Image (tube, rainbow, N blue to C red):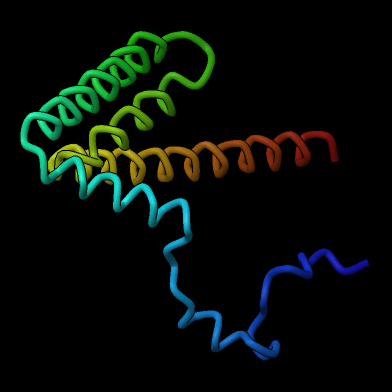
Length: 126
């Protein structure tokens, strides 16, 4: 049974090279980008938009931080809030990238620790 998704092009498939040169902006993204540009051209509307993004992003980060000690996706919610803030703030975007890198390293360390525990458990049972 082939576990590769037939919709995903692999090296050597017909159209693989052309797919890399395809435009990445889809119609909805294009519409959002043009709407954002229209907002930027109107200073008061731009200020209201940026304030709204900061309120939503800050609230999401705060909710994530409050939920971190509890079981569940508190860290992911906080990173999502930083991603929202990162749409309007370069500093938040960099902080989000650092947080994602840290989360990936923590996940890899947890996976390695579990593999070590499983190996020790198997060794004791053998």
